[in-house]
Length: 223
Image: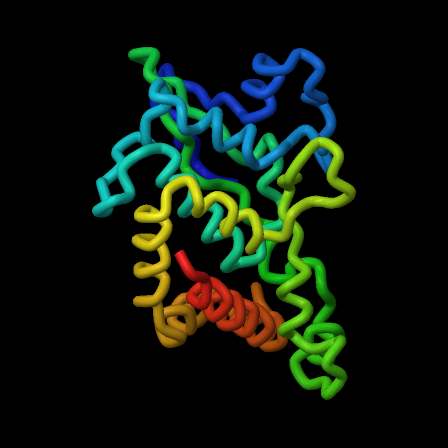
């Protein structure tokens, strides 16, 4: 649970509410494997001039627009292997003044191999079988975006970020530069703050390895 990030008398409008206004046939009530939930359609909506950056947004160099900020969300998804950026997990804040702002990034629960057992985690961390190792595991992380309504399966989280980066290369580079400044010690310090009864040693090691590998993959991208 978290506090509401909508201001008093403001409200959150989820992505599916917007998409069904763009396309009356859009399956608003379907939550998973929605092929009409294409990356290009979502980016086209977010980059409209009427959509402002998140409320209280602090400009980060070239990261100035709502689309610039959303590309940062997609980089985060690729880093933590968030596989649930579905149409209810992005949206807009309508302020009391009737301005429209990209909502903060939210609901990252389906990340970092959350559904794996500790025995599976330990096996992947220690195996000599290249097919069961961590590297191919992180490469398989699927997003909730499709490249087209006829695609057979969703795009990977890394491919989503790569495709979005073509629209705003300067903002993309800025986000990657910020990621490059995050060290393993920074990540370890965060995990050290999690109570021991809330995370096992295997889950901690597994998550940190995922972050390390995904960081390397992201920083190898040519923008």
